Length: 219
Image 1 (tube, helix red, strand yellow):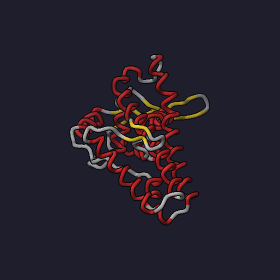
Image 2 (image 1 turned 90 degrees about the vertical axis):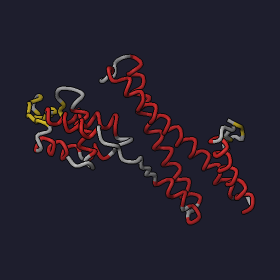
Image 3 (image 1 turned 135 degrees about the vertical axis):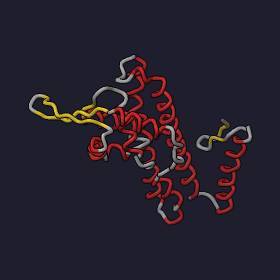
Image 4 (image 1 turned 30 degrees about the vertical axis):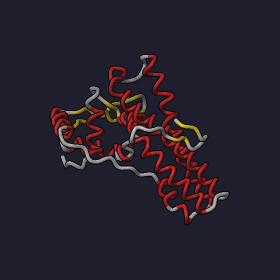
């Protein structure tokens, strides 16, 4: 399998977790677990699953569920070997894609309302992640999650996504406050505020206190 076929390997990884997967359950798990850090998997699941079967990495059988017919997939030994080889390769570098941040980068060409709309989208993205976490997290605490035996792994992913979402929220709040101050600030004051943002982050990196610009207190 090509080194770049990450989506196919993501599906192989899910197939390796249990004996058989109906397509709709695969889609549900991708939506529940992977869409925030590998969104391509959900949109390509049907094509990728068929490709896995054609390559001998998975099997597919049809079964009747009431009046409906569904396809059930299972990983083969060849699929497990392929998954293992992929996991043994170095991952590609982490990539960030955030159109809201791009809009802020081009803020000098935007209106305040356009910038607020961009930040509202970032806030909505963060809330979408947290909303899923508020459902999934209590399931693991109750011991009723579909993959409770994977909690030691899923908690690490939960930590990443929850931390990422709260970071997005705090950044959007700070940025909205900074943009509001622009209207009342002189160019010199704007520059001084900007320099202080950079300085405060570098101070934290060097072990000093940070500065929570939304409410003006040290953190």
